[in-house]
Amino acid sequence: MFGPVTTVMTFTDDPEKSARWWAAQLGADVHLDIDGESVYAWLTVAGVEIGFHQADDDRNPRGGSPVVYWAVTNLDAVRGHLLAAGCVHHRGPLTVSERRRICQIIDPFGTVIGLEGP
Image 1 (cartoon, one colour):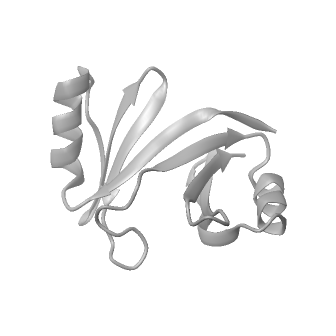
Image 2 (spheres, helix red, strand yellow; image 1 turned 45 degrees about the vertical axis):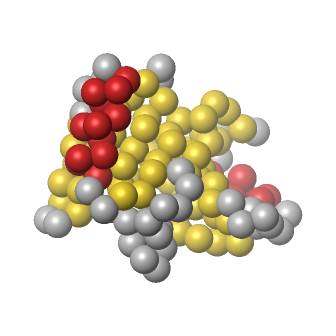
């Protein structure tokens, strides 16, 4: 039911600056998705997207832990299973691109988990 980890996302006041610092450390290229004032920056390292998203005091506080996204074969089915098992809804599902949907849930211990799949 679960596949490999696809994305590790961190939340920061300056996503581009954070991504550029990590890119220098990891020898990776920075990619940017800018939508108005919203900036999402990312690197790809060993096939894993390392993402930097704008911090948000309500949903993604500064200093929060990274959100690991798991590749799943059916986002809706896996999300439903985990909600039934005691997780709670956090964000999404969101359609990021034609073939990419994501959501976030919170496990019973307070950890935010991301799911990515069709």
